[in-house]
Image (cartoon, rainbow, N blue to C red; front, top):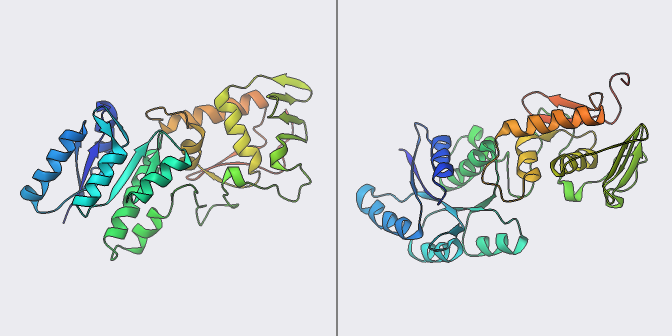
Length: 276
């Protein structure tokens, strides 16, 4: 039996993109742009199909708060809800979960993260799901991306990252010096072989995640979810490839930033080719 997802999102282009991303032989989707329309469709849905959908709910809508709608929905229907939010503030996340949301996704997000979160909720809704589905769903839990079982290294939450035994300074110092690099994140001064390098905001964030997790393979989905956290509507996965290549060139870091094909990237603890 097919699963149904009702997407409540006022950005029409994003809503259509979400529908296309989630549609499959097992999943049917429908979009609406206001809370009023969503309320009407939920009332009609049970009468028409006898089965209520999973609700993918934006928290900022033109005719009201998604949090208020979430509370009302949970008081009326027994359906799972995933929140879409541009706010990654802890209070917003806690408020949504306390009001009954099964999960949340912070904009911008990758399609891989979206599919994995939806799969996780559907799996919990139907405990008999296959082990393969369970493994896919566990790939992107809220707040912490697990390393792939066949990936090298261990992925950690960047904000709680630690340094290995290489003798580097603690991450919280925000100033590290190793090999030809002098990276001062506090003063936003980055030097390669004594020469200052100008980095944009996105490049600085990306570099910090790499350095905070040297030697660990970082999943593409997690990087996208974390690096672009400024409320943008959607980030294509190609944006990450472009940013990584630009960072490689600016820092002459091809000896360090390595692609782990099918998984993501890693900043090697030791250079793997001679300096240029």
